[in-house]
Length: 363
Image: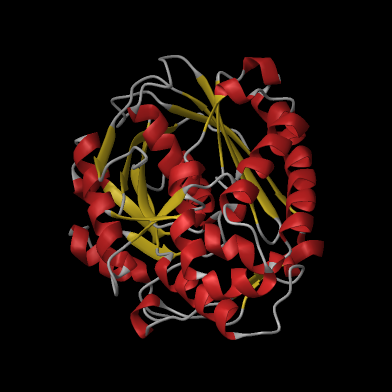
């Protein structure tokens, strides 16, 4: 997929105030650690994640998504009546029905003629949303679109801690399937796209590549379909080692197509932003793609894995921190369970980022 008429006009993010360290999670897991004689510091050592964040209890994703949407609109300085598409793309949602996008649309005061819906695709929901918005803009159907979402990690992390302490059947081997659930963090993000005539920045979306390797759809599964508004108590089982191997293999295949479509070589890429999983995943992925860590920007050590908003939040924070210069070619490299991969090629010019919440680690 190539694009001639699509710009990433602005980004925004919102972060919770409450920080939970990996040390604190291990303290809460003291009964399990004592029974299995697990060494302290194991969680951070395995993942490279020092801390992650929680929203206040019972916070609805839509409320935080409205906040990030307002920030993105304000940063872009666009008339919200220009927005013809709204996609809410996070795993977390207010209710199973109606679409969380409905409340966000109402809260943002968007026009009635705006197309709106939720997109769910594990950690790639917002990336898929960007593609759908770009296609409508490229076709001339709309002039601007807003893609956003909010992930809430408190229910998953706390339910996992409770289950690990309660069930005496866990072993040193079996608890590996629960580790990924303890790395999840909370955040919200928004991306505002426009056509080139509307854009003030000229931040071009140039190309995209996708791959679906659904032979491995069973490697990461939650127990049931739940919504935040109904007091979700999720449990997730993940074969992290095989998911990493097969996910990166899928990423390598996608990256080949990505380079061909964008007409780039790895050396042409000034900055990379990847889905934020952990230290081992990042190292192996960059090595497998022939990319250098010096050009990559990360947030997982202090935000954890924030699901579908991880990549856009990391992009926004990297932009805000001056890690991208005018004219840089950016590669957004997404891999999610299922297994799916979405990669986007951008040519950057001007940064417009709105933010709420500190964008640095607490330690």
